Image (tube, rainbow, N blue to C red; front, side, top):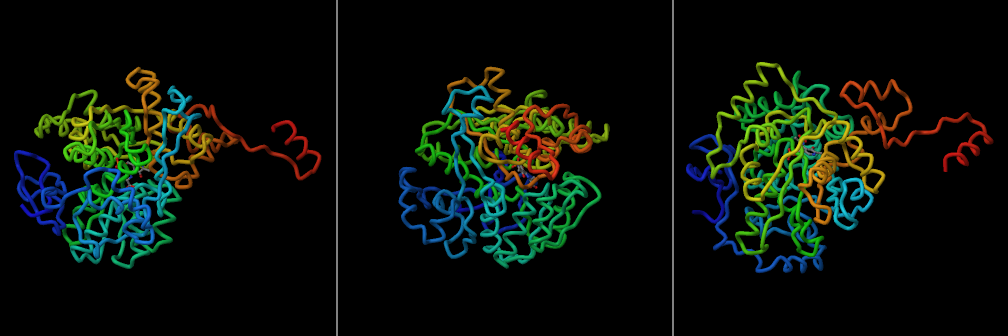
Length: 463
Ligand code: F0G
């Protein structure tokens, strides 16, 4: 084998492609591909602590980047091909007020805030890796289907690097304004399709194949290599101790797949003793993974998942004309492309899947915001899911839990303002139609006349 190649995730198939190939499907069976390394020829550090030396070399862009600082764990490209814009300067915050809401002891809940990335979401971790690969492959145009964050990230990387032209496919009316604004402002060719994300995803794969455009959705295994580093940064912030749980929202299931690969590799390389448990949280209105995993019992099964279960489920969606529907538009997805990789991740890491209704997502989001960091609705699904798992007793109060906040608060101001609004009509228009009934943690603006006494009185009453 080459030191690096792309290899089919089905162990019985084992189809491979060269590292610089851009088809992103197994040539033998059409399945998903991994980036596979021959660690004998690409030796990683002996200890995770060795990475700390890079902190002293922050003037080197490859040491500054929170992705490429861990380059020895994603060694698919020579240094001169790496394309970085300084992504991954993100933080792990101890969040005691949110811990109390979730039902955890103080000091046991941490929020990994990926909203600090250049485009405001975790996607930049993967986009820098995809762009590095695109440069290896000599690509000139890149495309994605998106619920908004992948498209924002692609647009930022194209405008910042000039390496490729961005083409983004979005479901018409399906993405939040903050994200649409980014695609437009950064000059991406924005194709609004009369359909939803699942339609756009299918179309972009057809178009990319036909026109030879480089695909940056998470079906691209290089994206997931970059997203592994979110977990390296979590470990680093915990002084290289493995938490008990990592809880992540699930949409296309790229993150959970990347996290599972990261921990499997670290364990196989002897760099950690055990992986954490993984919990994936679906929105109840887009709960394919929950249904398949928890209700229908679909499992990785040593690389032979019962594929008919997925087909039956999708057939049912089509027959009932059922479409994904949630206020957490980032994860409004019914046909996750990384389904089988996600099953493998849960198999390796003792995973669980939960669903949470929009009401709980928005309440958790308000608690996250009041606790210090702001996130978009999809991100708060992780916190709402952790709370459910605590209530069920699956997570114990003293366990150490990391929830991933995948995107920034300002991505979706409409949802936030509607939740806090004093105007019942605004609330109803945005949230009521989604089954949200209450805004228990609303922080309503105080209406006053333009009158000094009235203003002072209001402040005295409310503060
Ligand atoms: N959280 C946010 C903020 C997202 O934007 C996404 C996915 C997810 C969670 C789900 O992550 O797909 O790895 O399970 N957004 C994609 C997009 C689909 O197009 O921006 P996943």
